[in-house]
Image 1 (cartoon, rainbow, N blue to C red):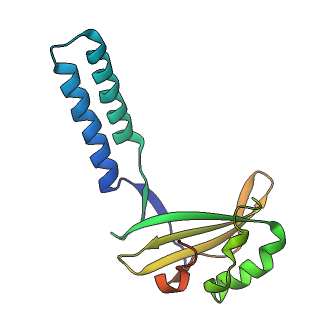
Image 2: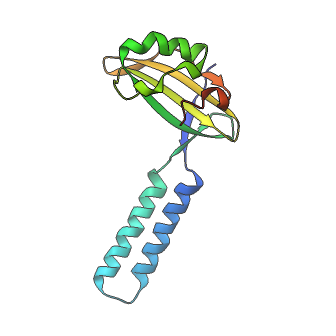
Image 3: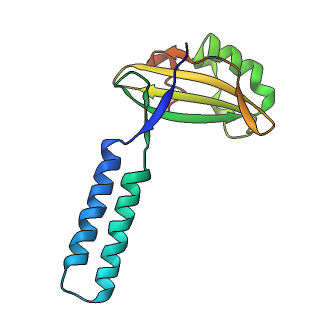
Length: 148
């Protein structure tokens, strides 16, 4: 399964950006001192940058569902057990060992509204993470231990 995800803006990203822009405009237009106008200008600039750069959710190419991403990192000695869990039973993956190493990466894309998620395992080879598995699709109840 060849799945590709790209970053998009969520409703909260847009709401934060627009709020900062409006607050910046209001402060800039108030008839007070130059300090208030400078603060308004910087809020306007910050809101514009957020609107241009900040994208916190993902979409799958060709679909309308919004996905969230979680990355889990593990030690190299857990590769075989995690690989077996990814392919057969994601509930068997022990997430208590997460964060103790950086050589194994598990990407989890999930959408609770669509009731599905995708997981893919990567191994670090010098300067790059190389895929160990293809993108595998599961129901949310099968991977809920990975998205907590």
